[in-house]
Length: 83
Image (cartoon, rainbow, N blue to C red; front, side, top):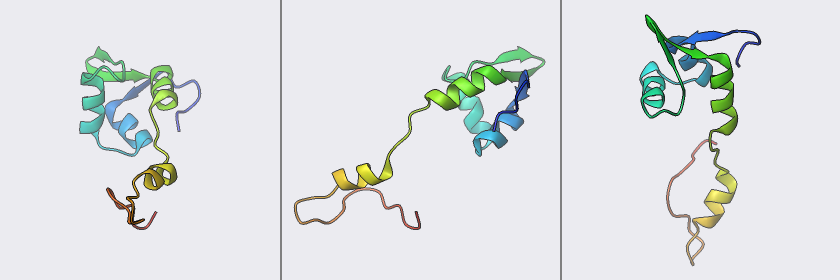
């Protein structure tokens, strides 16, 4: 997770923390979802990353799958095989 007292992270470090790729981090920055500093390389404040993680919407897969049942009881929509 975010290391305590770590003031700045690179895009590569953020992608490892979020378990995604650098392109996704750049997309989040360009969409103004994660504030970033442009100091030579792009840097993200640890406090901004923590705020993003805490406020990012989550989905409840169990409730979501219950809502997607049609009248016959068959599930409709995404499959979460192996979850």
